[in-house]
Image 1 (cartoon, rainbow, N blue to C red):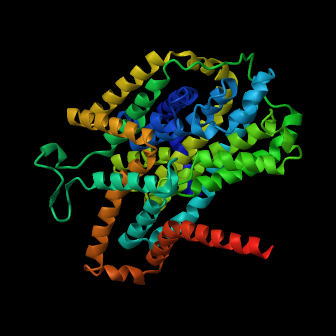
Image 2 (spheres, rainbow, N blue to C red; image 1 turned 180 degrees about the vertical axis):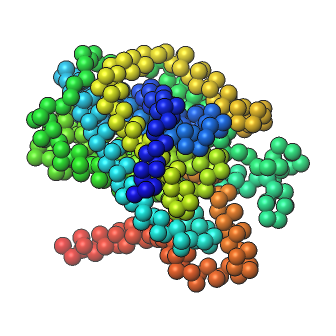
Image 3 (cartoon, rainbow, N blue to C red; image 1 turned 120 degrees about the vertical axis):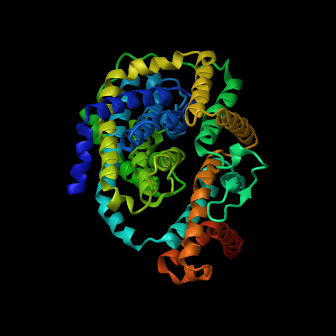
Length: 499
């Protein structure tokens, strides 16, 4: 309990509170702008946090994460265009409600559901922290290596492309991570005599390129797209009747979102879909869904915001990002010299709980920002794309250069942006590439440490119970789905024949 309250002391700093308010407002603006999302916002902000202390830096990134996920509901309800992919299911009932003149009611329910889901997920984090701390004493380099390998096995399902394309993109990210001089053997790899490549390619410029600049190139084809907006008088709190109708849905979706967020390779988008489907399945009037059911808004928004807190569990405790935005936050941790993993809850528990309390504060800000400023923030959708995306490009270039004041990083960001654009055009997700780049370096480092620890006897890893457990999970993650699918297909003909 002492660690819990020690983390709360960090919020006594007025400077940190001001930064969180600014980051939350910025996240709402980013989330409300169609095309931008939490991942892009966090990637653009990351270079500007390098001069900060670790707690304010990571707290701002998580504030962007939470607030942008919530803000996606604003455009989903008003213009039938989700600001983020996690709010796609909110369109199904939010926009029909807006068309009936109930946009304020829909947004009010989105605010309450988002706040509740976020708070519940943070409480779950705080309760789970002592259990994670106990596991810290059983992890050594072989366990970390096996755990990172398990994280890489999730690349097949973390993007929006096919599993094969996701694995190919992840393999490309791992390849990029090998560029430079090996720290253990001092052997140069793929440097081609270039001094700039001696220390490898930094993941921050790559993240800016694949998430920010590539999105600019994608959106360039939608410059003349016209969206139908719905007028809104004011956001209002849900009525007692609405709350009586949706409180079970909100609690259920909050639990679903937290659990889905904890699973590596899942995230808010998957959580919102499952939360929405479960809300429909348990509803007394499922026929209303898709026509303006308030339960649909509640189920989607509670789940996607709960997933943001859940995604921080594998990110902080295991060093495996639970979502694309969590991957950027993981990069922020590494840039600031923080080692994510189970030991964070023993050696850096004050930091972990300070981040949790910051997330709690940001989720409470939703009530103020959402109820008082949603109508104002909805106006950001009127910003011409001819102005918006060149501004994003400028921030991307400045952010890439600000990292080390290096023009080489700018070129890396530009090349990564073009690469990300062509990957998206041909059905490849850029998320596995980013995660492969981040985890690839960690995997190599932990393998080298394991070889030193085991005196080059790699087979000794299989004699360690935890390491063997993670190896088995990796095998199941890679070969389980296709084997299960094949068994299911074989049973179908037998079943039909039996009938």
